[in-house]
Image (tube, rainbow, N blue to C red; front, top):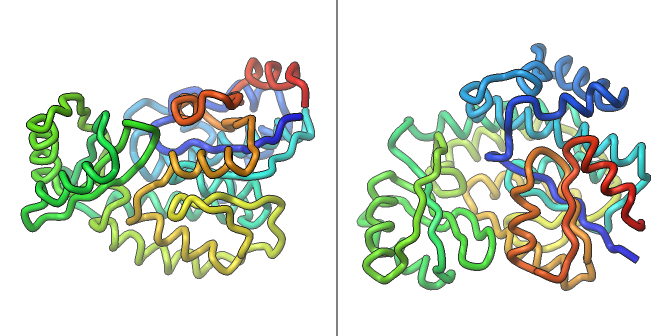
Amino acid sequence: MSKNAFIFPGQGSQYSGMGKELADNFTVARHLFQEADDALGFKLSSLCFSGSEDELKLTANTQPCILAVSIAALRVVQQETGLTARYLAGHSLGEYSSLVCSGVFPFADAVRTVRARGTYMQDAVPVGTGSMAALFGIDRDQLEDICREAAQGQIISPANFNSPGQTVIAGATAAIARAIEIAKSRGFRKSIVLPVSAPFHCALMQPAADRLADKLEEVTLNNDMLAPFVANVDAAPNLDIERIKPLLIAQVCAPVLWEQSVTAMAELGVNRFIEIGPGKVLSGLVKRINKEVITMNIEDCAGLQALEKEAV
């Protein structure tokens, strides 16, 4: 018997055309995209179905688009399979999808919130002054030591613990460049500067966190959670409604503990991780974290058919 976790992707999983096949084939998905369009006052659905790569890379577009596609896919999964999850989690932005899935965060409020969140995060740091890089083969203690040495009075810190040996750092552009050179000098030669528009999940995002706190004041959360969500900030299951907004605010500047979150869910008995939304990024990370579990991705009709064939 499978014990499921539903996991939801974050930025980087977007592509033009995402969600269109689901909208073309399922009324429940079409209705979800219409709800998103109505909530935002413009055709978010058109951005998802036919937006250019450059349009979709804009953070204020990326975040609501991925959320909408993820929840459209979720609605189809729920309608067609009746599957439920023991635990929910999302990578950064994906945490909002997990909270919509839990029933605690109304979708229209969520899509408006992440549209604003994307704007706040982009506005927090002038373009070019902050960056992110993926480093490989470095453990947490070594990474934190490299960041300390590279800082030289600037902000730099771990941003994502994605899987064993794959971590991301964020901070001032010059500090990121120094960290890469320090890592190379210590024998860690593989690194990739990420094509992102801002240094997410570090202290440079504090202005965005402050603005998000004000935005979240406008949102009324529902009282009943259908399943606990495993928060990025502490990698622990949460069912406390009062903690949700503080966790979402803290997440803007704190590292995403994805490896730790997947490990925690596996230790709680989860043996199947179903990634719901565009791309297969999280499925790949989960497999690197735990080779024993089953991973599946639902973003189109083929993924849905594969899920339906699996024993529930």
